[in-house]
Image (cartoon, rainbow over all chains, first blue to last red; front, top):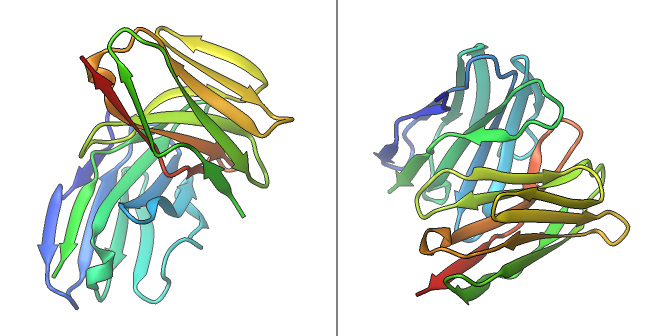
Length: 114
Length: 109
C-alpha cells in the first residue's frame, strides 16, 4: 500500500535553530503540497509543486521558510530561523496526474519550537 | 479569497445518520472534497464532487450544489470509529485544496 512518508515524525528544537522536514511522495505522483495545521488556523496551504516545479508558495513566510524538490522522490521544507509560533503539525501530500484523483497525506511532522 | 464554513461540532448516536454541511465562497472553484482526520493522524480522502449531485461511497455520501455554493457529507449507520474531524475543502485549478475549519463528530454509544 503506497504511502507518503514524512520524516521526522516529531521534532523539538530551540528558537533560532534550523529545521528541515522531508517528504517522500508516492511513486508516480507529480504534485506535492505542504500544509501546516494548528488549532487556531486549521489546515493552511504553504506551498505546492507540479513535476518538481514550484507553483505557489504564497502561503509561506518568505523570510524564514523555503520549500524545494531536489528530485521527484524528495520534497523538503526548511525553517531558518525557527520561532515558537512555527510550532505545528506539518503535512505533506501528493497527488497523481489523474484529474480527479485525491491527495494522499503523510502522517505529518509534529514540530515544537521552544 | 477562499472561505469555507462548516459547523464546529456534531454529536450523534451509533446507528444514526448525520449530515455535515459546508458552504463556500471561493474563486476558481473546481470541486468540493471531504477528508476525515482522527486525532493525531493524517487527513484521509472520503469523497469528491466535481459536478452537482450526489456521490455515494458505502456508508458515506457527498452532495454538491454549485449554484448554492453548498455541499454536505452524509454519514449513515454511524459507528464509534466514525468519531473524528471532517473537513470540506475546495479544489483549485492546480488541484490545491483550501480546507474549512473542520467539524468534530462525536458518536455516542
